[in-house]
Amino acid sequence: MQSVTKKVGNEGFTLVELMVAAFILSIAIIGILLGYVKCLDLNEMSRNSTIAVAATKSQMEQIKNTAFNQIFANFDDATFTSAGINGIGVTYVDNTNPTLLQITVSFCWQQKNGQVIGEDSNLDGNLDVGEDTNGNGIVDSPVQIVTNMFGG
Image 1 (cartoon, one colour):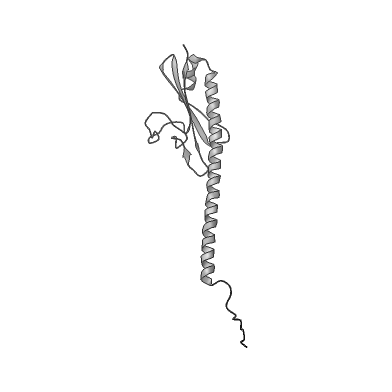
Image 2 (cartoon, rainbow, N blue to C red):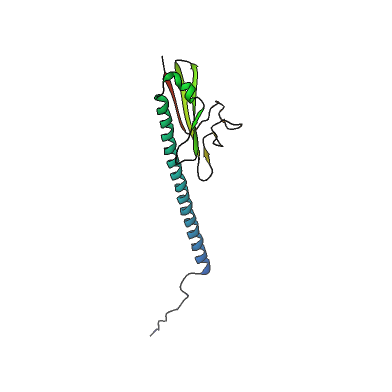
């Protein structure tokens, strides 16, 4: 009769296997955390964009409710702000054609991480040296309304 002997071996993981598993786990956790931080940044960008759009629309409504012959005097190069956001809006009125005004309303703001959205990098409502990246002479922003008003 043959005897069956059971070999008792070392069971479990080696130190190298544990280190590799810990490394892979740490890479996965770092990726998840970076994704979470990016989502927080995008959430803030969305919130600030919504506030900036509302402020820009409000400024445009004020212009629409102003007598046509007073629009240039009251709103050309005028700045405005909005509660809940660190930013400034600028209104430009082009009266080259006195019966057809081109009105541009832009809003620039600063995110919590310091990033400024729009060309007005110091948020003073004026174009300073180096801010007008496209050379059109006005502060541009992702939140901008351009319209024409006829007053003939």
